[in-house]
Length: 275
Image (cartoon, rainbow, N blue to C red):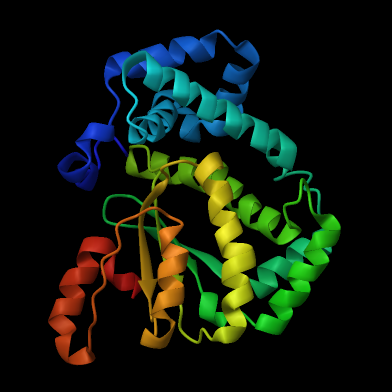
């Protein structure tokens, strides 16, 4: 979806790699058979190797690299991704995670993270109800998670990455089949309704850490991030979280008197029935 994303083509065409750069990257990967095998089996979403290499090349071009330098940097980023996957045990996390089943059950119970079908261009929609988290329950989850940490990554973050693995290795391929094209860029909705000072640890020690991992593991898979129900008193905190995504942030303030404006805005972002 990166190649035909209308926002990308309108505002960031300079970061789309050329066919020559993609071919050079693929040739370098082919020189490392073990890494090529892992790319195809675990990293390439919906078995689309070219689209996956395009996302790593995009990162390289954001650093101002072109041509052979772009290809070389993209391979370095891919290798970093593979190393991180091996260190965290992600290749087997769906079948044999490092944390016990009861911890996984606690995570699902404490962290309200749900899937809501597809957006207007086939983007999978994921919702995290940050404000709906019980701070005391999360702090307990985080503390217990240290006992099952891997490579200094808390088990709570590993549980989040397990959700990501399920999304990109199971849900996205199924949805891609249903819409007839690769749907590898998601809409993430962060709902801050009910968020208070007690949620700072969740934002700082969990969400921020998880985002840093996803930048390495699943580069350029965010189509857009929508933050909803953000109180003005917590907007500065919200901006700190959003800055981790390295995205341009647009804010809009509505009242229910602006219903037609709300509907027009949401229609550009989501399927209206979701709201």
